[in-house]
Image (cartoon, rainbow over all chains, first blue to last red; front, top):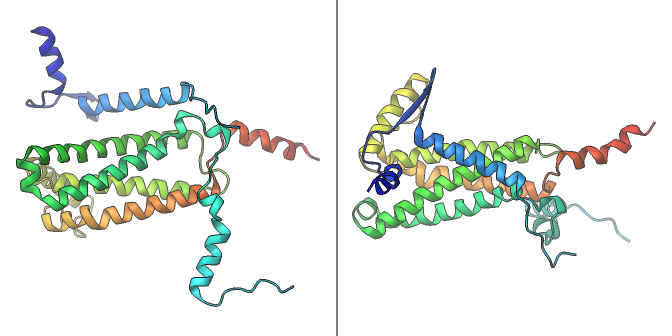
Length: 57
Length: 214
């Protein structure tokens, strides 16, 4: 029951959005999560090895 | 042996210029430099792939209309495909921008590549914004009335009316996709013309012998 609530919470959009505040900056939690995921993907793209093409001369 | 003559028609001059700047093997190359084998170089083509999905799903939504995308399950599905392909388009484009910014991708006469990409980014924001305005629901009413105040306060509200559904619909499905599409085409042609920007260490290493030459 608790787990289903925890899983449902991030995708249930039927409530007012959550916001974070830093001084004059106000950002929705959803946008903050998207930006964090983009930063993680960016860093992973720099660090992860690219598969080698075996047919390449 | 006769010297090559300059074409005397505009079509001939355009052809000569296109063949000079973009010879066929450079326009559609079969191989890329070895440094392109990195995940950070993948985000440009991911952005392009997402853009094609945006265009395709947007075309279906335009054909079927608001009643369909609000009331039928297939309409909801295509509406969601359009939304999420836009989300991916913007996310991939921003990661592409971060990668190119930190490798100073305007090096080596690539200023036009950088500028067309940056303007395309701005145009995409406008296209996404007008998309929110034409959802034909309470969300779009709220966004348009809030945006109207912001745009009027910025002094540009007299040039267009974000609460005019017909105007914003035409901007979203005709004007802005055309502008963004042309910019993407020019951007890709610039990449083909100048080549993919090399990493900074390769660029600097290649320049060191020239600088050390007395």
